[in-house]
Image (cartoon, rainbow, N blue to C red):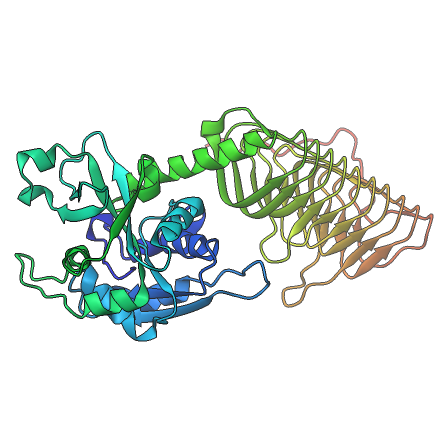
Length: 460
């Protein structure tokens, strides 16, 4: 269910598209459904339907096939029962319908699987929660045999019922034929004039059907997002989960509370991550990698033994970034899309690399730019040097062959090739390719005027 407006978010963005851990709230729900072997997911949209439908994707299943993702619209929004009614025409009668909320992102797959097992394709099963303070929530009233007899809203509950600490989470599993029949019996004869999905419990009991409940105590799994405050609270809960999973794998985190993974992060053995690091997209860290404090790394592969010093920014976007084994990057370095660095490459402070390949052992230690360049082995690229790769209309490539030494404050105007073993004198602007082993100097001749007097200010 993803049709609500989310007024308390105070945002033009539909609530279910607000992001948690780098993914839309509803995308978390869809991805979790895929992990319990759902055949298809039906997303019920309403407010901001076009945005929601454009903002969600079907995850790939382990089989390599994408989950079938369908959309139906609830217009106007007349309650939870009315929402699920819109999905009835596309539900297959030979399965179980699992009803989930698009703003409840952190339910664990194993919890949903336990609920489906309890349903067993035969009965209505509810996911319930034990709460220390259930004020305001509907209570689960159980029969003597432990089955669910009713859900009683707080305002309608007796004192004895209000003492019950088990509440309904909003998540249920039900055989689709039974759900179809019960939804047809819903009415809106209530104070809100809405069709309530919870009325199916009343119908099941009246029909003599067993209603079972799977009770959990982890509130985070059924917590919804209705405000920026609740979103921030769930973000920290999610990041704590991620941090704990990484530490269980052996990753050393300087402070688990100061880690943000907004995508997927895979780590080899003996990885160290300092504080305030952000990982986005798909990031892979090899064995023995060390990440310094305050780094932002997105869509990158960092191989064994590489060190990313503090305040480094790596963003591969669609092209990706790769950092070779034993490389040293930063501090204050920037690797942009298409940066492909070989083994033991050094990229120092205030160096930017974009769409460039650096072979093993190449070094650009400070204050430099390499864009659209192919750099050979053991090249030393001087401070303040740049590749001038853009002529105002098109990008051109610079080739720096193996063992070249580029002095400080040089401009290599692409397209140009610096031959193997060559040297470019500091302060040179190179516009033509150079042969191997040559010294190339292209700068104005130094002029010295002895005893030169500076101009003096005129007196008023």
